[in-house]
Image 1 (cartoon, rainbow, N blue to C red):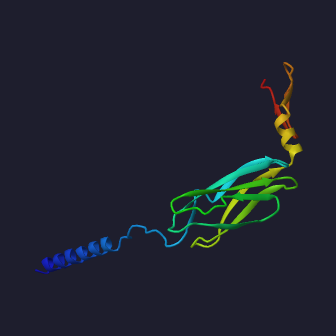
Image 2 (image 1 turned 90 degrees about the vertical axis):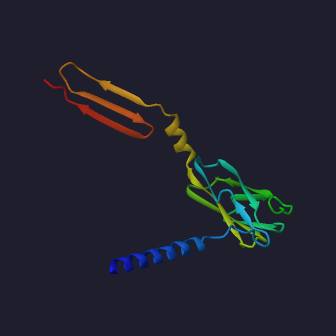
Image 3 (image 1 turned 90 degrees about the horizontal axis):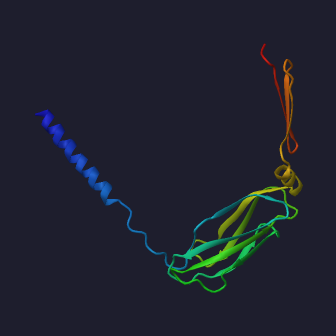
Length: 179
């Protein structure tokens, strides 16, 4: 008898738990009252470039809200980055663009150029970024343009020596001949 009561109680509690989980599922996402900016990508990695190169990238966004979206200004983290953007209001459901141009002259190493988008979006200010690495033009040219040079000296009963030079890196290898 106890087993039957325990089984009935467990089934009842299991049914309540299953009903509670289905009743608390999230409702379909509703449109936000007012403008809302949503980007396809928040960060663009331009990889490795040589100093002096200019990177030009376009960030695409959509107004997923219910009112026209207006971008009033775009702040940049330094003068090496120049923004341009869709100046007219972006209607609900429509798209716009922000183009960022990064000039790497005078820059070295890892770069993270942030653009702060000031708009009437209900989410407030939004940030996107250009990231990558700037290397010295001379070292990039030398490493990519210098062909590998190999000198091999061998004799029938002597040790073999091999020297390889790739750019500034030197590799030496010795091989003793087995007797």
